[in-house]
Amino acid sequence: MSTVKELLQKSNHYSGHERQSAIAALTPYTEAIVLRPLLRRANNWAPQDRSAAKQSLRHQLFKGDTVFHFIIGHRSLT
Image 1 (cartoon, rainbow, N blue to C red):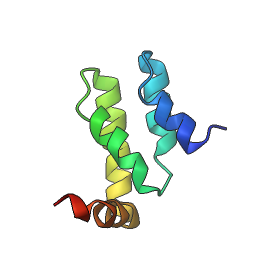
Image 2: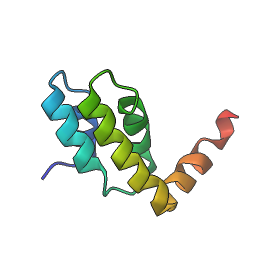
Image 3: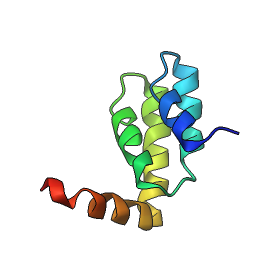
């Protein structure tokens, strides 16, 4: 089992299979830090990465807490 840090690194892997697997594995994590790579992959050129990231983002958005912590953690940027 990989840690969140390892999965975040794998989400940028050169292999699409590694990226897609990391994206799917990030889905259950509630840390706000997982949103950035998911948002980045939702705009990926590979349809499999895009699809996996969008599915994961939908899951994250409906959890509520992850998005709240992401917004609160970055409110100083506005």
